[in-house]
Length: 53
Image 1: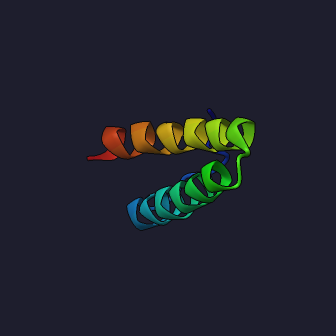
Image 2: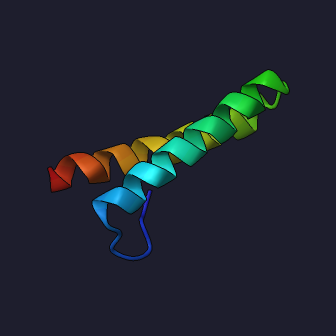
Image 3: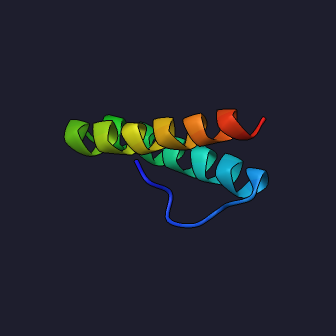
């Protein structure tokens, strides 16, 4: 996953929270493929956050 532009740590954390909520909703609605894609994006943001700590 490529992050298009440098983001602040706070922006990355916000993106993780928002995308995690969307993935949870997708699971609830039975949209497993969408949930999996979103979870992959979240993992990319988590890796980026780990690099910056």
